[in-house]
Image 1 (cartoon, one colour):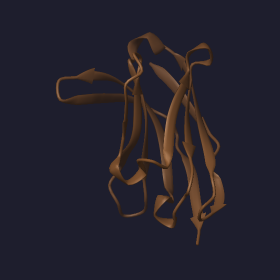
Image 2 (image 1 turned 120 degrees about the horizontal axis):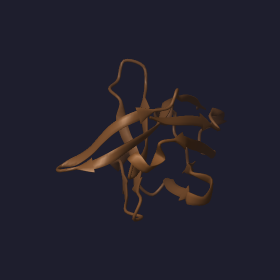
Image 3 (image 1 turned 90 degrees about the horizontal axis):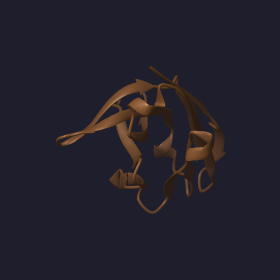
Image 4 (image 1 turned 180 degrees about the vertical axis):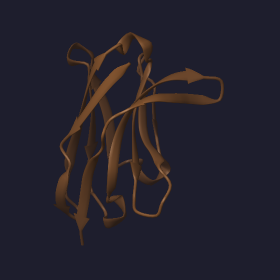
Length: 120
């Protein structure tokens, strides 16, 4: 099992920036993809960004050009740099670890989530 601990959430004004961090520990050899998801009240959880062990990156359409995912393999940490934040970006952000499968990613491990609030 993989333990994922997020940090970096908080309150920011619209147009501002935040950087989220996710530190992974445990059986990290069992995952080959890390990602960030988010869930706003009364909405479904959605993929924000993912990064694979070989460096492939995908973003959700709503964050392209504003968010950047990166990883520090030496620290087993994944980051999400969020710029030009909008009120609609407010949500609980979850870090997840998974494996690539045919047609997508199987997300098997989840962090506890960190709240991002964007004031207008």
